[in-house]
Length: 564
Image (cartoon, rainbow, N blue to C red; front, side, top):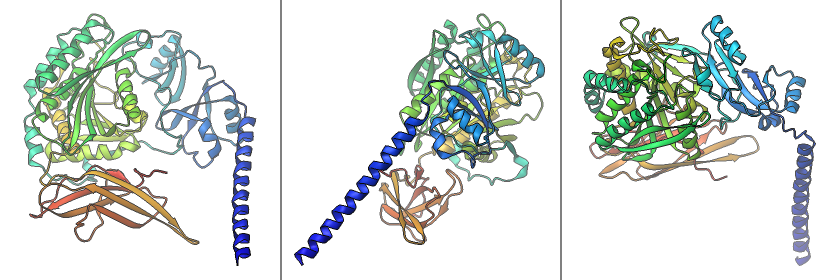
């Protein structure tokens, strides 16, 4: 018997040694294969059209750095060796530039052939999409080179997402298509919406206009930032300067007002606009009433009204600077937010919401695919509380305002703008002044944005929404099938709670369905027999002894707290 046990142990040891040997051999082969690839220091900027996801070998993905997503293509950075591999396997691509050292690249919106010709005379140009060009020049301050009517975005150095070549067609959803049901009215949101004052909005715009110019890099822009900061402080809102540098040697500040959430303060809803301005005489006179004192005024008015309410999630009122230079302020904030792992639920960016070229004027909403749910939620809120016509367009190439850096970092964000392409004849001119604006339209848009932001941040409910929600998942496999189980845990809500409801969806922030047939009386729940390849998202509500149901908790993904 002892001999038999010994032989069994000997076999086990032999098996373990064999497995270790296999792992060692695999590592050696991996190192050999990696070292056999040319480790070239040359970096090339390459355009790769979408719809090629099934043809790109997975082993090449780590060597292709996603730099910018557009509607029909990706701008990527890679090496000459990887480029030759793409050519071998027939991946459609276009080389944009072969020497990236010491250069700053900008996306430029080019509405006409005349604009394209002018741009070509000012520097290097590559057309990457219809009306979208890549531009660079030896001049460090590109904003100083380009004429006033060009819209620009500084190309990010790298976005923190894996390259995913997929088709994301632009499309529109109009209000009259009736694809969205009306949101449930909340009397507290109705009251907030009713408090938006046209007179206050006009006063804020006039005050910003009175700085004469708010062109970033000028003292007047900084004075305007101080004015906004002092206003937030007077409201009793936590206020802070978010300083950053931009272009060759300039600095400026984003202005941030914070209203901490009561239930899940680490979850953040952002409403924003840029306060810097631009014109053909930018150093002396750039009143920027529509672009973008109108959006800044909306942020300030929303802060005034919402500071008197309590919300489940934190609200941040942010006025960005150096937007006109290439979105430097929002780029700085979004990058730092990602590094800090800030949990941003959604960003509502208002840029030019005061000019009406026709009546009734509608609002254009721009989202990318990841932010489609946010656009839908905005429309729901507007339909419920405000009479406003809205057009929603899914288009990742709409990158010329402060929502775009949040897209780059993987956050959901939308742009609200009066028209695009722009129809304001005073755009970036010295007569972009308050008397050219339709303040009824600006007031309506501010009300719609407030309704959407309040709905996202959720006015505190009775009972309180559950907090501290965590989720981890586990996949179990057998010979013929695999199944996933999600384990949820949360903190008990205060008061006389009868139990909890669990809601699940496979589309983040949308289409929640209750999955428990009776109230869950514990603060944990296991969801069995799920498809392993599908990501699931959960929210939880509390139900009290009066059968009142709370707001949703923060959303969690099934594998959010997995440790391996």
